[in-house]
Amino acid sequence: MMRTKLIAFITKWILKLFYGTNTWDVRGAEHFLVLLQNNKSVIISAWHGQLLGVFMHLSKTGKGYYGLTGTHKDAELITQVGERMGWEFLRGSSKERGKEAFKNIVNTLSSESVLLAITPDGPSGPARIPKPGVIRASQKTNTAVVPVSIHSSRHWTFTNWDAFFLEKPFGKIWIEYGEPIYFDSKQPFEEASQKLIDAMDQIQENNLHYANNSK
View 1 (cartoon, rainbow, N blue to C red):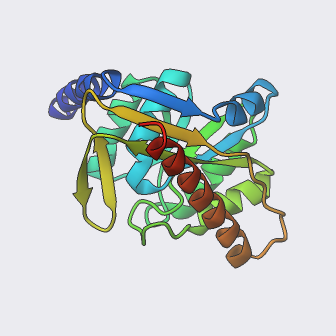
View 2: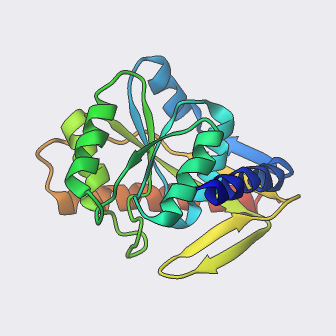
């Protein structure tokens, strides 16, 4: 336990160094900030491979935001790092305590002015294929989903079932939040899933185009 706490402490400051020395170009944050200011909850949807950059930006934007982590050993480290940066966490995933995790997500989103960051394809893929959780939660609570994309000039890539990016120091990070999308409560999952994929693809295309033309 003490070892995990020490690693979490060190990891927090390494991440702050890496991301704090980058130049940030952020666009579209008003799409979720206005919702929060109007006492609405919002789901931030980031693909698993781009999660870390989104996590670090939101850490700078506000406190008391929610994330979703599993219950395994690695998730405990992630949770402790996040808590040191002002995050709160719901524990569970599609594979671990799924029903309990979904209930906690719905209850949390039913509160006023809550931001919940979710990887719709995590924690084990397949990459960029949404699991039902984020869509079902949005449908049940009428919560807006804001897609987000990250691109960076310098990063390391780690590959298992997905390409996971860790930004290097002294680079530039482009991040774009898209317009909120909603799902009709009776919309079939396959149709809603494609709607989310299309929105995620579009925001990534926009962000990459902007980044490539602003370097």
